Image 1 (tube, rainbow, N blue to C red):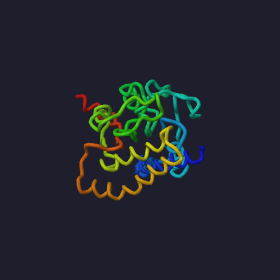
Image 2: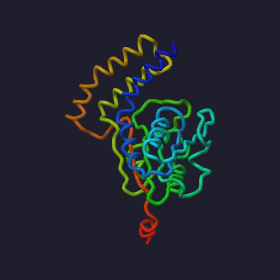
Image 3: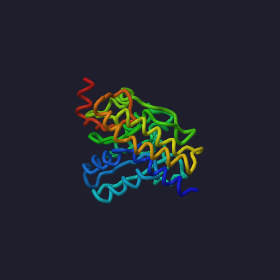
Length: 232
Protein backbone atom coordinates (compact mmCIF):
# COMPACT_ATOMS: atom_id res chain seq x y z
CA UNK A 1 0.00 0.00 0.00
CA UNK A 2 2.74 2.48 0.97
CA UNK A 3 4.73 1.48 -2.10
CA UNK A 4 2.32 2.89 -4.68
CA UNK A 5 1.61 5.99 -2.62
CA UNK A 6 5.34 6.75 -2.45
CA UNK A 7 5.64 6.35 -6.23
CA UNK A 8 2.64 8.63 -6.77
CA UNK A 9 4.20 11.22 -4.45
CA UNK A 10 7.48 11.16 -6.34
CA UNK A 11 5.75 11.38 -9.72
CA UNK A 12 3.64 14.36 -8.62
CA UNK A 13 6.82 16.24 -7.72
CA UNK A 14 7.79 16.23 -11.40
CA UNK A 15 4.98 18.78 -11.78
CA UNK A 16 4.95 20.60 -8.45
CA UNK A 17 8.73 21.03 -8.16
CA UNK A 18 9.57 21.68 -11.78
CA UNK A 19 12.75 23.77 -12.02
CA UNK A 20 13.22 23.89 -8.25
CA UNK A 21 16.40 21.80 -8.04
CA UNK A 22 18.00 23.77 -10.87
CA UNK A 23 17.18 27.01 -9.07
CA UNK A 24 18.79 25.79 -5.83
CA UNK A 25 21.92 24.34 -7.43
CA UNK A 26 22.33 27.32 -9.76
CA UNK A 27 22.64 29.65 -6.77
CA UNK A 28 24.44 27.38 -4.30
CA UNK A 29 27.27 26.69 -6.74
CA UNK A 30 28.11 30.40 -6.59
CA UNK A 31 28.59 30.36 -2.82
CA UNK A 32 32.29 30.54 -1.89
CA UNK A 33 34.08 27.65 -0.22
CA UNK A 34 34.10 27.77 3.59
CA UNK A 35 30.90 29.82 3.62
CA UNK A 36 28.23 29.08 6.24
CA UNK A 37 24.72 28.22 4.94
CA UNK A 38 21.47 27.88 6.88
CA UNK A 39 18.82 25.50 5.51
CA UNK A 40 15.45 26.20 7.14
CA UNK A 41 13.25 23.10 7.14
CA UNK A 42 14.88 19.76 7.82
CA UNK A 43 14.45 16.40 6.17
CA UNK A 44 13.49 15.36 2.67
CA UNK A 45 14.87 16.09 -0.77
CA UNK A 46 15.78 19.74 -0.21
CA UNK A 47 18.07 19.08 2.73
CA UNK A 48 19.70 16.20 0.85
CA UNK A 49 20.29 18.44 -2.19
CA UNK A 50 21.69 21.30 -0.09
CA UNK A 51 24.06 18.94 1.72
CA UNK A 52 25.18 17.42 -1.60
CA UNK A 53 25.99 20.93 -2.86
CA UNK A 54 27.89 21.63 0.36
CA UNK A 55 30.09 18.59 -0.20
CA UNK A 56 30.66 19.47 -3.85
CA UNK A 57 31.33 23.20 -3.47
CA UNK A 58 33.03 23.23 -0.09
CA UNK A 59 30.69 25.25 2.13
CA UNK A 60 29.12 24.11 5.41
CA UNK A 61 25.39 23.79 5.99
CA UNK A 62 23.25 23.53 9.12
CA UNK A 63 19.61 22.49 8.84
CA UNK A 64 17.03 23.70 11.34
CA UNK A 65 13.41 22.93 12.09
CA UNK A 66 10.95 23.61 14.89
CA UNK A 67 9.96 19.92 14.85
CA UNK A 68 12.52 17.60 16.50
CA UNK A 69 10.90 14.63 14.74
CA UNK A 70 12.36 15.87 11.44
CA UNK A 71 15.83 15.36 12.93
CA UNK A 72 17.33 18.80 12.22
CA UNK A 73 20.91 19.62 13.11
CA UNK A 74 19.49 22.29 15.43
CA UNK A 75 15.92 22.69 16.69
CA UNK A 76 15.26 26.37 15.96
CA UNK A 77 12.45 28.74 15.03
CA UNK A 78 13.10 31.09 12.09
CA UNK A 79 10.80 33.68 13.69
CA UNK A 80 13.03 33.89 16.79
CA UNK A 81 16.30 32.19 15.95
CA UNK A 82 18.94 31.41 18.55
CA UNK A 83 21.78 32.07 16.10
CA UNK A 84 23.76 35.30 16.39
CA UNK A 85 23.33 38.19 13.99
CA UNK A 86 25.27 38.25 10.70
CA UNK A 87 26.09 34.57 11.11
CA UNK A 88 25.30 33.09 7.67
CA UNK A 89 26.57 33.71 4.16
CA UNK A 90 23.37 32.29 2.68
CA UNK A 91 19.94 31.14 3.86
CA UNK A 92 17.82 28.56 2.01
CA UNK A 93 14.07 28.50 2.72
CA UNK A 94 12.39 26.14 0.27
CA UNK A 95 8.65 25.41 0.59
CA UNK A 96 8.66 26.50 4.25
CA UNK A 97 7.37 30.09 4.43
CA UNK A 98 3.74 29.01 3.99
CA UNK A 99 4.10 27.00 7.22
CA UNK A 100 5.47 29.90 9.27
CA UNK A 101 2.90 31.47 11.59
CA UNK A 102 4.55 34.92 11.62
CA UNK A 103 6.12 35.64 8.21
CA UNK A 104 6.94 39.27 9.11
CA UNK A 105 9.14 38.16 11.99
CA UNK A 106 10.67 35.44 9.82
CA UNK A 107 11.62 37.99 7.15
CA UNK A 108 13.16 40.23 9.83
CA UNK A 109 15.15 37.28 11.19
CA UNK A 110 16.48 36.47 7.73
CA UNK A 111 17.76 40.03 7.47
CA UNK A 112 19.36 39.77 10.92
CA UNK A 113 20.97 36.37 10.39
CA UNK A 114 22.54 37.15 7.01
CA UNK A 115 25.99 38.66 6.79
CA UNK A 116 26.20 41.86 4.75
CA UNK A 117 26.27 40.68 1.15
CA UNK A 118 24.75 37.32 2.13
CA UNK A 119 22.08 35.78 -0.07
CA UNK A 120 18.59 34.38 0.41
CA UNK A 121 17.12 31.57 -1.71
CA UNK A 122 13.41 31.00 -1.17
CA UNK A 123 10.48 29.27 -2.79
CA UNK A 124 6.87 29.28 -1.68
CA UNK A 125 3.55 28.23 -3.25
CA UNK A 126 0.78 30.42 -4.63
CA UNK A 127 -1.87 28.36 -6.49
CA UNK A 128 -1.27 25.15 -4.61
CA UNK A 129 -3.34 22.64 -2.59
CA UNK A 130 -3.34 22.35 1.16
CA UNK A 131 -0.51 20.18 2.46
CA UNK A 132 0.99 19.24 5.81
CA UNK A 133 -2.38 19.93 7.39
CA UNK A 134 -3.05 21.71 9.73
CA UNK A 135 0.26 23.58 9.51
CA UNK A 136 -0.38 25.26 6.16
CA UNK A 137 -1.11 28.92 6.88
CA UNK A 138 -0.42 31.28 3.96
CA UNK A 139 -0.11 31.79 0.21
CA UNK A 140 1.91 34.66 -1.28
CA UNK A 141 1.74 36.76 -4.42
CA UNK A 142 4.97 38.10 -5.89
CA UNK A 143 3.95 41.52 -4.62
CA UNK A 144 3.56 40.21 -1.09
CA UNK A 145 6.98 38.59 -1.25
CA UNK A 146 8.50 41.79 -2.60
CA UNK A 147 7.06 43.67 0.36
CA UNK A 148 8.18 41.06 2.91
CA UNK A 149 11.77 41.11 1.66
CA UNK A 150 12.01 44.75 0.61
CA UNK A 151 15.13 45.12 2.75
CA UNK A 152 17.10 42.94 0.33
CA UNK A 153 18.79 44.20 -2.80
CA UNK A 154 19.04 42.51 -6.21
CA UNK A 155 15.64 41.01 -5.40
CA UNK A 156 14.43 38.69 -8.15
CA UNK A 157 11.05 36.93 -8.01
CA UNK A 158 9.84 34.73 -10.84
CA UNK A 159 6.99 32.35 -11.50
CA UNK A 160 7.76 28.67 -11.08
CA UNK A 161 5.58 27.64 -14.01
CA UNK A 162 2.91 28.91 -16.41
CA UNK A 163 -0.77 29.21 -15.54
CA UNK A 164 -1.82 26.09 -17.55
CA UNK A 165 0.96 24.09 -15.89
CA UNK A 166 -0.28 25.31 -12.49
CA UNK A 167 -3.64 23.72 -13.26
CA UNK A 168 -1.92 20.41 -13.95
CA UNK A 169 -0.11 20.62 -10.62
CA UNK A 170 -3.50 20.64 -8.89
CA UNK A 171 -4.47 17.50 -10.78
CA UNK A 172 -1.19 15.76 -10.00
CA UNK A 173 -1.34 16.70 -6.32
CA UNK A 174 -4.91 15.38 -6.08
CA UNK A 175 -3.42 11.95 -6.73
CA UNK A 176 -1.70 12.25 -3.34
CA UNK A 177 -4.87 12.90 -1.35
CA UNK A 178 -5.78 10.29 1.30
CA UNK A 179 -8.96 9.32 -0.56
CA UNK A 180 -7.10 8.64 -3.81
CA UNK A 181 -7.02 4.94 -4.62
CA UNK A 182 -4.61 2.62 -6.37
CA UNK A 183 -6.85 3.06 -9.42
CA UNK A 184 -7.72 6.77 -9.34
CA UNK A 185 -4.25 8.08 -8.46
CA UNK A 186 -2.43 6.63 -11.50
CA UNK A 187 -5.30 7.77 -13.74
CA UNK A 188 -4.98 11.37 -12.52
CA UNK A 189 -1.22 11.30 -13.00
CA UNK A 190 -1.55 9.78 -16.47
CA UNK A 191 -4.00 12.52 -17.43
CA UNK A 192 -1.63 15.20 -16.12
CA UNK A 193 1.29 13.77 -18.12
CA UNK A 194 -0.88 13.48 -21.24
CA UNK A 195 -2.02 17.10 -20.98
CA UNK A 196 1.41 18.53 -20.22
CA UNK A 197 2.46 19.21 -23.86
CA UNK A 198 -0.81 21.10 -24.43
CA UNK A 199 -0.35 23.09 -21.21
CA UNK A 200 3.23 23.90 -22.18
CA UNK A 201 2.13 25.16 -25.60
CA UNK A 202 -0.84 27.19 -24.31
CA UNK A 203 1.37 28.79 -21.69
CA UNK A 204 3.68 30.07 -24.41
CA UNK A 205 0.93 31.14 -26.79
CA UNK A 206 -0.99 32.95 -24.04
CA UNK A 207 1.59 34.03 -21.45
CA UNK A 208 0.27 35.65 -18.29
CA UNK A 209 1.45 36.05 -14.71
CA UNK A 210 -2.07 35.82 -13.23
CA UNK A 211 -1.50 32.28 -11.91
CA UNK A 212 1.42 30.03 -11.08
CA UNK A 213 2.10 27.19 -8.65
CA UNK A 214 4.58 29.32 -6.74
CA UNK A 215 7.51 31.68 -6.82
CA UNK A 216 11.29 31.47 -6.74
CA UNK A 217 12.98 34.34 -4.92
CA UNK A 218 16.59 35.37 -4.58
CA UNK A 219 18.06 38.45 -2.98
CA UNK A 220 21.07 39.80 -1.17
CA UNK A 221 21.49 41.68 2.09
CA UNK A 222 23.05 45.07 1.37
CA UNK A 223 26.57 45.77 2.44
CA UNK A 224 26.61 47.88 5.60
CA UNK A 225 27.82 50.97 3.76
CA UNK A 226 25.02 50.63 1.19
CA UNK A 227 22.42 50.16 3.92
CA UNK A 228 23.69 53.21 5.78
CA UNK A 229 23.61 55.25 2.58
CA UNK A 230 20.00 54.22 1.94
CA UNK A 231 19.00 55.62 5.34
CA UNK A 232 20.58 59.03 4.79
